Amino acid sequence: MKTQFALCAAAGIIPFVRPPGKAYSYTSRLLDVGAFGLLYQMVESAEEARELVAWTRYPPTGVRGAVFGGAHDDYTDGDMAEKAVAAMDRTVVMALIETKAGLENVDEIMAVDGVDIAHLGHADLSLSLGIPGQFDHPDLQGGIDKIVEAATKVGKAAGAMAPTRRKPVWAGFTLAGVVVALDQVSKAWLLAWLEEQGAWQQVTGFFNLVMVWNRGISFGMFQSGETGRWLLVLFSTLVCLGMAIWLWRQNKFWPGLALGAVIGGALGNIIDRIWRGAVADFFDFHMKYLYCRKHS
Image 1 (cartoon, rainbow, N blue to C red):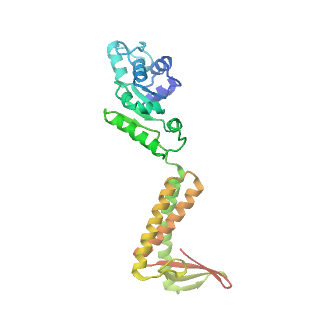
Image 2 (spheres, rainbow, N blue to C red):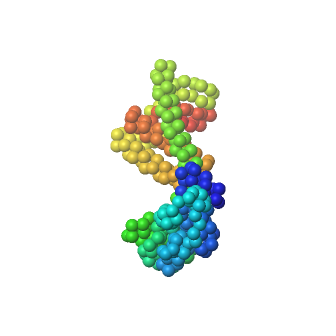
Image 3 (cartoon, rainbow, N blue to C red):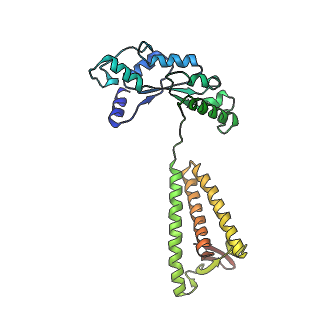
């Protein structure tokens, strides 16, 4: 870890560590090799919080043993008193609130001088509250509010693990943008080409290009003039928003891409209805008496 902390210092990164346990030996060793902040697990009382803070402070305010000219101060010389003050000023103490007892005492814990951040331990707290994994449960949400309030009212910060925006999200939204662009470019080209060549062009024995303005939905259903047009715009917009939220929460690659493709196609239709007054349909697949017309 000493090497990792040195690399962090070179890169301008502040190294925080979660000690494997609540013991002075872990605290002193991690600080001496260069940690700038410690995240203590399952802090449950103000008395415990004061002891944890004392481990990170030099006498007379704490009990941390003195090691200077080492990794934590870049092996430099200097005034011991100044180095001690600088080390204490930069050390961040974070209390993980992840038990029912810790939640009940969070106000007193955050009032302890030297505790800088109240950090939510969402999984363990849900277990301790008897609602394992139910992160939307009112009891857990109320606990989160209590943690934030306890930190805020004493001018301190509250923290939590932040979800990483996964690749399916950005891949899906990127594909949606590509689909919209291709949709509008292809429509513009086909509209110009069919206007010049004629509104009906046979391509194969089962596929034609046929210019049809669809003012309703598939196969011209639900056509009802301007009122219907704008109702469909509104409905399509709401559907897109719903699918965008679904995509934002998606954590699988292929379903994310599928949602992006559907969103892109729906947005293309919305643009058509607003700009052209109707959706341009071109693709006419058929087999004897069976037809399937697909807009581009």
